[in-house]
Amino acid sequence: MSTYRGARFFALGLLFVSLAPRIEARKHSAKKTAPKERQASAQIEAAVHLQIFLDRSNFSPGKIDGRYNEVTRKALALYRQSRGEQPQTPPPDAKSKVAPDINGLDLGSVEPVFITYSVTQADLQNVGKLPASPKEQAKLKALLYRDPADAIAEKVHCDVHFLEQLNPGKTKSIKVGDQLRVPNVELFELGEVKDIKPGSGINAPAANELPDEPGKRLGEQPAPSQNSSATVESSQATSSVKIDTKTNTLGVFEADKLIAAYPVTIGSAQTASPIGDWKVKGVSKWPRFRYDEKMLKHGQRSGHFYMLPPGPRSPVGVLWIALNKKGIGIHGTAAPDSIGHSVSHGCIRLANWDVVRLAERVKFGTQVSIH
Image 1 (cartoon, rainbow, N blue to C red):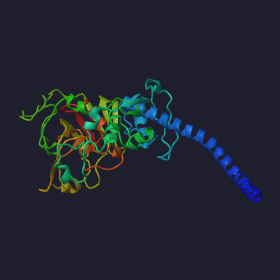
Image 2 (image 1 turned 180 degrees about the vertical axis):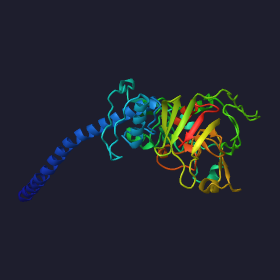
Image 3 (image 1 turned 90 degrees about the horizontal axis):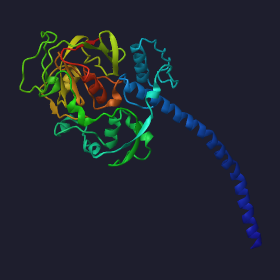
Image 4 (image 1 turned 135 degrees about the vertical axis):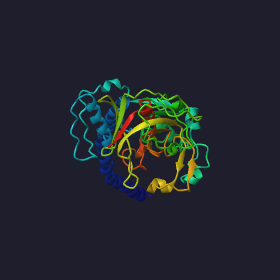
Protein backbone atom coordinates (compact mmCIF):
# COMPACT_ATOMS: atom_id res chain seq x y z
CA MET A 1 0.00 0.00 0.00
CA SER A 2 2.81 2.37 0.96
CA THR A 3 4.57 1.59 -2.33
CA TYR A 4 1.35 2.42 -4.23
CA ARG A 5 0.93 5.73 -2.39
CA GLY A 6 4.53 6.63 -3.05
CA ALA A 7 4.14 5.95 -6.76
CA ARG A 8 0.95 8.03 -6.82
CA PHE A 9 2.59 11.02 -5.15
CA PHE A 10 5.55 10.69 -7.47
CA ALA A 11 3.24 10.75 -10.54
CA LEU A 12 1.37 13.77 -9.23
CA GLY A 13 4.68 15.52 -8.66
CA LEU A 14 5.74 14.83 -12.23
CA LEU A 15 2.38 16.16 -13.49
CA PHE A 16 2.77 19.37 -11.51
CA VAL A 17 6.32 19.84 -12.77
CA SER A 18 5.13 19.40 -16.36
CA LEU A 19 2.17 21.79 -15.91
CA ALA A 20 4.08 24.50 -14.07
CA PRO A 21 5.73 25.99 -17.20
CA ARG A 22 2.37 26.05 -18.99
CA ILE A 23 0.65 27.82 -16.09
CA GLU A 24 3.47 30.35 -15.91
CA ALA A 25 3.30 30.88 -19.69
CA ARG A 26 -0.45 31.56 -19.48
CA LYS A 27 0.09 34.09 -16.69
CA HIS A 28 2.79 35.78 -18.74
CA SER A 29 0.54 35.80 -21.82
CA ALA A 30 -2.34 37.30 -19.84
CA LYS A 31 -0.04 40.06 -18.55
CA LYS A 32 1.03 40.84 -22.12
CA THR A 33 -2.54 40.75 -23.49
CA ALA A 34 -4.10 43.09 -20.91
CA PRO A 35 -2.18 46.22 -22.02
CA LYS A 36 -2.99 45.42 -25.67
CA GLU A 37 -6.68 45.11 -24.85
CA ARG A 38 -6.60 48.41 -22.97
CA GLN A 39 -4.82 50.05 -25.90
CA ALA A 40 -7.38 48.69 -28.39
CA SER A 41 -10.24 49.88 -26.16
CA ALA A 42 -8.69 53.36 -25.97
CA GLN A 43 -8.30 53.48 -29.76
CA ILE A 44 -11.94 52.50 -30.26
CA GLU A 45 -13.11 55.16 -27.81
CA ALA A 46 -10.96 57.79 -29.54
CA ALA A 47 -12.45 56.86 -32.93
CA VAL A 48 -16.00 56.98 -31.50
CA HIS A 49 -15.21 60.36 -29.93
CA LEU A 50 -14.29 61.75 -33.36
CA GLN A 51 -17.29 60.13 -35.06
CA ILE A 52 -19.71 61.60 -32.51
CA PHE A 53 -18.13 65.04 -32.87
CA LEU A 54 -18.56 64.94 -36.64
CA ASP A 55 -22.10 63.57 -36.35
CA ARG A 56 -23.12 66.35 -33.96
CA SER A 57 -21.49 68.91 -36.28
CA ASN A 58 -23.68 67.71 -39.20
CA PHE A 59 -20.70 66.25 -41.07
CA SER A 60 -21.90 62.71 -40.76
CA PRO A 61 -19.50 59.75 -40.57
CA GLY A 62 -22.43 57.43 -41.33
CA LYS A 63 -22.84 54.58 -38.87
CA ILE A 64 -20.70 54.87 -35.74
CA ASP A 65 -18.47 51.80 -35.47
CA GLY A 66 -15.36 52.83 -33.54
CA ARG A 67 -13.08 52.75 -36.59
CA TYR A 68 -11.18 55.39 -38.56
CA ASN A 69 -12.90 54.21 -41.72
CA GLU A 70 -12.97 55.91 -45.11
CA VAL A 71 -16.36 57.55 -44.52
CA THR A 72 -15.15 59.09 -41.25
CA ARG A 73 -12.01 60.44 -42.92
CA LYS A 74 -14.09 62.00 -45.72
CA ALA A 75 -16.40 63.61 -43.15
CA LEU A 76 -13.42 65.06 -41.29
CA ALA A 77 -11.93 66.44 -44.52
CA LEU A 78 -15.24 68.11 -45.40
CA TYR A 79 -15.57 69.53 -41.88
CA ARG A 80 -12.12 71.09 -42.18
CA GLN A 81 -12.99 72.37 -45.67
CA SER A 82 -16.08 74.07 -44.24
CA ARG A 83 -13.82 75.96 -41.83
CA GLY A 84 -11.34 76.99 -44.51
CA GLU A 85 -8.71 74.58 -43.22
CA GLN A 86 -6.43 72.30 -45.19
CA PRO A 87 -7.59 68.68 -44.86
CA GLN A 88 -5.07 66.03 -43.91
CA THR A 89 -3.83 63.81 -46.74
CA PRO A 90 -5.59 60.44 -46.34
CA PRO A 91 -3.40 57.36 -45.82
CA PRO A 92 -2.72 55.24 -48.93
CA ASP A 93 -4.37 52.26 -47.23
CA ALA A 94 -8.14 52.89 -46.91
CA LYS A 95 -8.25 50.44 -43.98
CA SER A 96 -5.45 52.14 -42.08
CA LYS A 97 -5.86 52.25 -38.31
CA VAL A 98 -3.67 55.33 -38.02
CA ALA A 99 -5.58 58.11 -36.29
CA PRO A 100 -6.19 61.22 -38.42
CA ASP A 101 -5.02 64.66 -37.34
CA ILE A 102 -7.50 65.99 -34.77
CA ASN A 103 -5.63 69.17 -33.84
CA GLY A 104 -7.97 72.14 -33.52
CA LEU A 105 -11.12 70.03 -33.06
CA ASP A 106 -13.21 70.83 -30.00
CA LEU A 107 -13.65 67.19 -29.01
CA GLY A 108 -14.17 68.32 -25.43
CA SER A 109 -17.63 69.50 -26.50
CA VAL A 110 -18.61 65.83 -26.69
CA GLU A 111 -18.47 64.42 -23.19
CA PRO A 112 -18.97 61.71 -22.15
CA VAL A 113 -18.28 59.58 -25.22
CA PHE A 114 -20.67 56.85 -24.07
CA ILE A 115 -23.90 57.12 -22.12
CA THR A 116 -26.34 54.63 -20.62
CA TYR A 117 -29.59 54.25 -22.53
CA SER A 118 -32.69 52.75 -20.93
CA VAL A 119 -34.83 50.73 -23.37
CA THR A 120 -38.42 51.99 -23.64
CA GLN A 121 -41.71 50.42 -24.63
CA ALA A 122 -41.73 52.61 -27.76
CA ASP A 123 -38.48 50.98 -28.89
CA LEU A 124 -40.10 47.55 -28.81
CA GLN A 125 -43.31 48.77 -30.47
CA ASN A 126 -41.30 49.62 -33.58
CA VAL A 127 -40.19 46.00 -34.01
CA GLY A 128 -42.04 43.51 -36.19
CA LYS A 129 -41.66 40.69 -38.67
CA LEU A 130 -39.76 41.63 -41.81
CA PRO A 131 -39.97 39.06 -44.63
CA ALA A 132 -37.30 39.22 -47.32
CA SER A 133 -39.55 39.16 -50.41
CA PRO A 134 -41.37 42.29 -51.65
CA LYS A 135 -44.45 40.13 -52.24
CA GLU A 136 -44.69 39.29 -48.54
CA GLN A 137 -43.67 42.81 -47.46
CA ALA A 138 -46.55 44.26 -49.49
CA LYS A 139 -49.01 42.36 -47.26
CA LEU A 140 -47.88 44.18 -44.12
CA LYS A 141 -49.14 47.45 -42.66
CA ALA A 142 -45.62 48.70 -41.94
CA LEU A 143 -42.00 47.66 -42.49
CA LEU A 144 -40.58 47.80 -38.98
CA TYR A 145 -37.23 46.98 -37.40
CA ARG A 146 -36.11 43.34 -37.42
CA ASP A 147 -35.44 43.21 -33.67
CA PRO A 148 -34.84 45.57 -30.71
CA ALA A 149 -31.08 45.73 -31.38
CA ASP A 150 -31.80 46.92 -34.93
CA ALA A 151 -34.14 49.63 -33.60
CA ILE A 152 -31.78 50.89 -30.90
CA ALA A 153 -28.71 50.80 -33.15
CA GLU A 154 -30.47 53.13 -35.60
CA LYS A 155 -31.67 55.36 -32.77
CA VAL A 156 -28.05 55.95 -31.69
CA HIS A 157 -26.64 56.12 -35.27
CA CYS A 158 -24.66 52.98 -34.54
CA ASP A 159 -23.56 49.84 -36.34
CA VAL A 160 -25.60 46.98 -34.88
CA HIS A 161 -22.50 44.79 -34.49
CA PHE A 162 -20.74 47.59 -32.65
CA LEU A 163 -23.75 47.89 -30.34
CA GLU A 164 -23.31 44.19 -29.57
CA GLN A 165 -19.61 44.77 -28.94
CA LEU A 166 -20.42 47.53 -26.45
CA ASN A 167 -22.99 45.33 -24.70
CA PRO A 168 -21.71 41.73 -24.78
CA GLY A 169 -24.47 39.20 -24.14
CA LYS A 170 -27.19 41.85 -23.79
CA THR A 171 -28.51 42.48 -27.31
CA LYS A 172 -30.07 39.09 -28.11
CA SER A 173 -32.98 39.42 -25.68
CA ILE A 174 -33.55 43.12 -25.05
CA LYS A 175 -36.53 44.10 -22.89
CA VAL A 176 -38.02 47.29 -21.51
CA GLY A 177 -35.81 48.84 -18.82
CA ASP A 178 -32.57 47.23 -19.98
CA GLN A 179 -29.55 49.51 -19.63
CA LEU A 180 -27.31 49.68 -22.69
CA ARG A 181 -24.01 51.44 -23.31
CA VAL A 182 -24.37 53.60 -26.44
CA PRO A 183 -22.60 56.49 -28.23
CA ASN A 184 -23.57 59.95 -26.96
CA VAL A 185 -25.35 61.21 -30.11
CA GLU A 186 -28.52 63.22 -30.59
CA LEU A 187 -31.05 60.38 -30.61
CA PHE A 188 -32.97 59.63 -33.79
CA GLU A 189 -36.57 59.58 -32.59
CA LEU A 190 -38.74 57.65 -35.02
CA GLY A 191 -41.94 59.14 -33.58
CA GLU A 192 -40.78 62.68 -34.41
CA VAL A 193 -40.48 62.13 -38.17
CA LYS A 194 -44.07 63.33 -38.63
CA ASP A 195 -43.14 66.63 -36.92
CA ILE A 196 -40.38 67.53 -39.40
CA LYS A 197 -40.95 70.99 -40.87
CA PRO A 198 -39.53 71.06 -44.40
CA GLY A 199 -40.44 73.84 -46.78
CA SER A 200 -43.08 71.74 -48.52
CA GLY A 201 -44.87 68.45 -48.05
CA ILE A 202 -46.34 65.95 -50.48
CA ASN A 203 -48.49 62.87 -50.16
CA ALA A 204 -48.64 60.62 -53.21
CA PRO A 205 -49.79 57.02 -53.79
CA ALA A 206 -46.08 56.18 -53.88
CA ALA A 207 -43.13 58.53 -53.46
CA ASN A 208 -41.45 57.34 -56.66
CA GLU A 209 -44.66 57.89 -58.68
CA LEU A 210 -44.56 61.70 -58.70
CA PRO A 211 -44.56 63.10 -62.27
CA ASP A 212 -41.80 65.13 -63.91
CA GLU A 213 -42.18 68.91 -63.83
CA PRO A 214 -39.27 70.04 -66.05
CA GLY A 215 -40.98 73.24 -67.18
CA LYS A 216 -41.87 74.62 -63.75
CA ARG A 217 -39.92 77.72 -62.79
CA LEU A 218 -37.81 77.75 -59.64
CA GLY A 219 -39.99 78.75 -56.73
CA GLU A 220 -43.26 78.43 -58.64
CA GLN A 221 -46.00 77.03 -56.44
CA PRO A 222 -47.42 73.71 -57.71
CA ALA A 223 -51.11 73.29 -58.38
CA PRO A 224 -53.17 72.64 -55.22
CA SER A 225 -53.81 69.00 -54.41
CA GLN A 226 -56.34 67.32 -52.15
CA ASN A 227 -53.45 65.15 -50.92
CA SER A 228 -51.15 68.06 -50.09
CA SER A 229 -49.95 67.73 -46.49
CA ALA A 230 -48.41 71.19 -46.16
CA THR A 231 -48.36 74.60 -47.80
CA VAL A 232 -45.59 74.97 -50.35
CA GLU A 233 -43.26 77.89 -49.91
CA SER A 234 -43.05 79.99 -53.05
CA SER A 235 -39.92 81.91 -52.13
CA GLN A 236 -36.71 80.92 -53.84
CA ALA A 237 -34.52 78.67 -51.72
CA THR A 238 -31.23 80.16 -50.58
CA SER A 239 -29.52 76.85 -49.90
CA SER A 240 -28.30 74.32 -52.44
CA VAL A 241 -27.32 70.66 -52.45
CA LYS A 242 -24.37 69.20 -54.34
CA ILE A 243 -23.94 65.44 -54.74
CA ASP A 244 -20.51 64.13 -55.70
CA THR A 245 -20.92 60.74 -57.37
CA LYS A 246 -17.16 60.09 -57.26
CA THR A 247 -16.81 60.46 -53.49
CA ASN A 248 -20.35 59.36 -52.49
CA THR A 249 -20.94 62.53 -50.52
CA LEU A 250 -23.76 65.10 -50.35
CA GLY A 251 -22.96 68.67 -49.35
CA VAL A 252 -25.39 71.38 -48.24
CA PHE A 253 -24.36 74.93 -49.07
CA GLU A 254 -25.53 78.37 -47.98
CA ALA A 255 -24.37 80.56 -50.85
CA ASP A 256 -20.88 79.09 -51.43
CA LYS A 257 -20.29 77.99 -47.84
CA LEU A 258 -20.44 74.29 -46.99
CA ILE A 259 -22.56 73.90 -43.85
CA ALA A 260 -23.32 70.15 -43.70
CA ALA A 261 -22.32 66.91 -45.42
CA TYR A 262 -23.62 63.35 -45.43
CA PRO A 263 -22.40 60.07 -46.94
CA VAL A 264 -24.67 58.72 -49.69
CA THR A 265 -25.13 55.73 -51.95
CA ILE A 266 -25.65 56.53 -55.62
CA GLY A 267 -26.93 54.67 -58.67
CA SER A 268 -25.26 51.80 -60.49
CA ALA A 269 -24.03 51.54 -64.09
CA GLN A 270 -27.41 50.02 -65.08
CA THR A 271 -29.54 52.62 -63.28
CA ALA A 272 -27.25 55.61 -62.87
CA SER A 273 -28.15 58.65 -60.80
CA PRO A 274 -29.20 61.41 -63.24
CA ILE A 275 -26.27 63.78 -63.74
CA GLY A 276 -27.36 67.40 -63.98
CA ASP A 277 -29.14 70.18 -62.13
CA TRP A 278 -32.50 69.49 -60.50
CA LYS A 279 -34.84 71.02 -57.93
CA VAL A 280 -36.57 69.84 -54.78
CA LYS A 281 -40.32 69.62 -55.42
CA GLY A 282 -41.45 68.37 -52.01
CA VAL A 283 -40.93 66.02 -49.10
CA SER A 284 -42.92 62.88 -48.36
CA LYS A 285 -42.87 61.55 -44.79
CA TRP A 286 -43.46 57.84 -44.23
CA PRO A 287 -43.53 57.21 -48.00
CA ARG A 288 -44.96 54.15 -49.66
CA PHE A 289 -42.83 52.67 -52.42
CA ARG A 290 -43.73 51.11 -55.77
CA TYR A 291 -41.44 48.10 -56.07
CA ASP A 292 -41.08 47.32 -59.77
CA GLU A 293 -38.11 44.98 -60.28
CA LYS A 294 -37.82 45.70 -64.00
CA MET A 295 -37.81 49.43 -63.32
CA LEU A 296 -35.25 49.12 -60.55
CA LYS A 297 -32.86 46.91 -62.50
CA HIS A 298 -33.28 48.15 -66.06
CA GLY A 299 -35.05 51.50 -65.80
CA GLN A 300 -38.13 50.17 -67.64
CA ARG A 301 -41.55 50.36 -66.03
CA SER A 302 -43.65 47.17 -66.01
CA GLY A 303 -47.12 46.15 -64.91
CA HIS A 304 -45.75 43.69 -62.35
CA PHE A 305 -45.07 45.54 -59.10
CA TYR A 306 -45.76 45.55 -55.36
CA MET A 307 -46.84 48.58 -53.35
CA LEU A 308 -44.75 48.47 -50.19
CA PRO A 309 -45.99 50.07 -46.96
CA PRO A 310 -44.04 52.76 -45.09
CA GLY A 311 -41.68 52.20 -42.20
CA PRO A 312 -38.02 52.47 -41.15
CA ARG A 313 -37.18 49.27 -43.04
CA SER A 314 -38.85 50.37 -46.26
CA PRO A 315 -36.40 50.46 -49.20
CA VAL A 316 -36.77 54.26 -49.13
CA GLY A 317 -36.66 54.62 -45.36
CA VAL A 318 -38.73 57.13 -43.43
CA LEU A 319 -38.58 60.07 -45.80
CA TRP A 320 -38.41 60.89 -49.53
CA ILE A 321 -37.16 64.23 -50.91
CA ALA A 322 -38.63 64.39 -54.39
CA LEU A 323 -36.74 65.91 -57.32
CA ASN A 324 -38.31 67.18 -60.56
CA LYS A 325 -37.29 63.92 -62.25
CA LYS A 326 -39.86 61.11 -62.08
CA GLY A 327 -38.85 58.18 -59.91
CA ILE A 328 -35.74 59.94 -58.59
CA GLY A 329 -35.43 61.21 -55.05
CA ILE A 330 -33.14 61.61 -52.08
CA HIS A 331 -34.34 59.19 -49.44
CA GLY A 332 -33.67 57.03 -46.41
CA THR A 333 -32.75 53.36 -46.37
CA ALA A 334 -33.54 49.98 -44.88
CA ALA A 335 -29.81 49.19 -44.61
CA PRO A 336 -27.74 51.97 -43.00
CA ASP A 337 -24.62 49.79 -43.16
CA SER A 338 -24.74 50.02 -46.98
CA ILE A 339 -24.45 53.81 -47.15
CA GLY A 340 -21.35 55.00 -48.97
CA HIS A 341 -20.50 51.50 -50.20
CA SER A 342 -23.13 49.71 -52.29
CA VAL A 343 -25.16 51.08 -55.21
CA SER A 344 -28.78 52.22 -55.42
CA HIS A 345 -31.30 52.06 -58.26
CA GLY A 346 -30.61 55.60 -59.42
CA CYS A 347 -31.77 57.50 -56.35
CA ILE A 348 -29.59 59.12 -53.69
CA ARG A 349 -29.78 57.12 -50.46
CA LEU A 350 -28.84 58.23 -46.91
CA ALA A 351 -29.14 56.77 -43.44
CA ASN A 352 -32.56 57.59 -41.98
CA TRP A 353 -31.12 59.85 -39.28
CA ASP A 354 -29.21 61.82 -41.95
CA VAL A 355 -32.05 62.21 -44.47
CA VAL A 356 -34.26 63.65 -41.72
CA ARG A 357 -31.62 66.25 -40.89
CA LEU A 358 -31.20 67.03 -44.58
CA ALA A 359 -34.96 67.51 -45.03
CA GLU A 360 -34.92 70.26 -42.44
CA ARG A 361 -32.38 72.16 -44.56
CA VAL A 362 -34.18 72.10 -47.92
CA LYS A 363 -37.44 73.54 -49.26
CA PHE A 364 -39.43 73.68 -52.45
CA GLY A 365 -37.12 74.92 -55.21
CA THR A 366 -33.80 74.09 -53.53
CA GLN A 367 -31.24 73.48 -56.27
CA VAL A 368 -29.76 69.97 -56.37
CA SER A 369 -26.68 69.34 -58.48
CA ILE A 370 -25.63 65.74 -59.21
CA HIS A 371 -22.19 65.59 -60.74
